[in-house]
Length: 171
Image 1 (cartoon, rainbow, N blue to C red):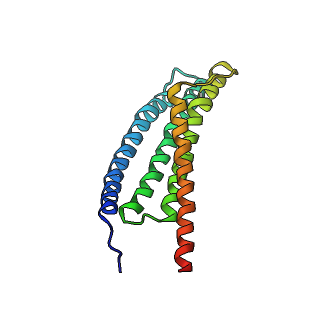
Image 2 (tube, rainbow, N blue to C red):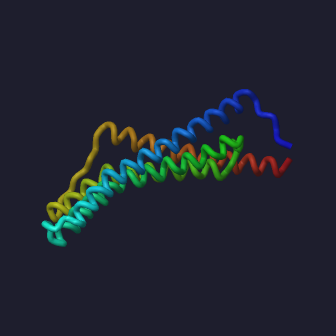
Image 3 (cartoon, rainbow, N blue to C red):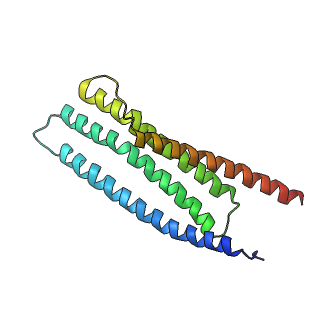
């Protein structure tokens, strides 16, 4: 027997379904962007007869480094999409969904660390043989803080769903 949902929960369920569609659209856009920003230039670099093998490796390495944040953000959006699937089914107290929210936050944090530290430093090491650089601006600090909050909320939701399961088992 399926419990009857309140109007607010029905609205939340519909919102989750709509958000899930937008998440899929975002994933398609990210994949397309990765393919054009990375795939085409990597193919050109690999098949350019005027470049020696060291230059080819350097160019491909730089492109792969630059794509790292997009790959991590892709997985962050994908984890949120998976959580939204649970909410769309009315599974608002799903441990699985809340864990996926936390994982999305973790992938977003890793993506932001890649934007702030990994990409600038690996780029310097590949192009100049060393050095230190950091991409630290107000927007990157804000996005990093947001990612940390998403990860924290996911962990709070996970603890809440576990507490609810314990209470349900007790009753």
